[in-house]
Image 1: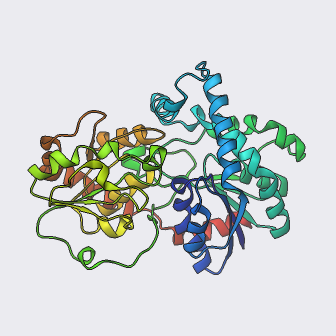
Image 2: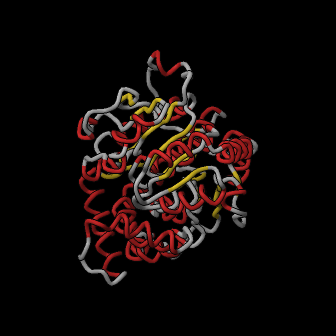
Image 3: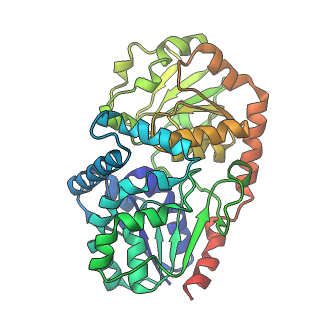
Length: 394
């Protein structure tokens, strides 16, 4: 079987498909990834995961297309260009008000999917996949599946609800659908669901699949191979937040708060942003640059982050409590899911010593986090989903 993966640009959309791609490849199937990046290095990061990748759009073109989608979305919302700098938070709030339904933001991904469409269809027509796996807001893969008459499988990334997004994305891509002589979505469509049922409820018709985190590899430092005697707390802002303005604002509290807590704080915010902007760090804060999150969380008692899907799902997989500081996109939806399940905390306000102490000492949070981890580990693994995909492809 040949499986083509198509992803929306951005590591938060790209990395979640890696585990399924690995599972397919390990089972003897051929895979190919058609992708574009929002920053230089994103496409290479997928290749570094050991996957064959075709770049379908340059970074500049991807960003211009996405910017056009943002403008169209804001005009549709009646906001014009006012507050354009604040659109990520506005979109995130709208998504949360809509119960996590991606149809509220799918329109803004139309121009980006349309810009990718010709190259994705060309790759598909030459490579002839039996199945196309796409991320929820990536429309070019769905178009290619419809044109080739092969099944399309949606690979989600977190707690957003995707059931009504495809028709909105299809309407936003009407011109490119007509250009390719395709009238509607693929006839055979399946959605996967990676969210544990106790946090997301039943998604009608979706195939459950365990979320297996992937966030890159690295050579482990000595300190990362052992769990410390006192609690260790991971601090991260994922792959997007620090890149908006090259700032660590959501973590500015760490200088004043960390020194009052008997714990080690690991500042894992990548290598492109200088932690010195936070000021003089207390001795119990370790600036670590880039650290693969799953390796770090295995030694941690808790995690503090912005609420991105990968940064939320990884602590759930590790079975540790988390504090979410939502800023934009689906982060408010993820925060709601974690708080309602009782396996973590969230705030849009100030982070103080009491909040961090509660994160580390509240046994109810730790118990719920352990329960969610056990639930996730009981879901079918990507390897166990592979035979169902092969049967779907026929």
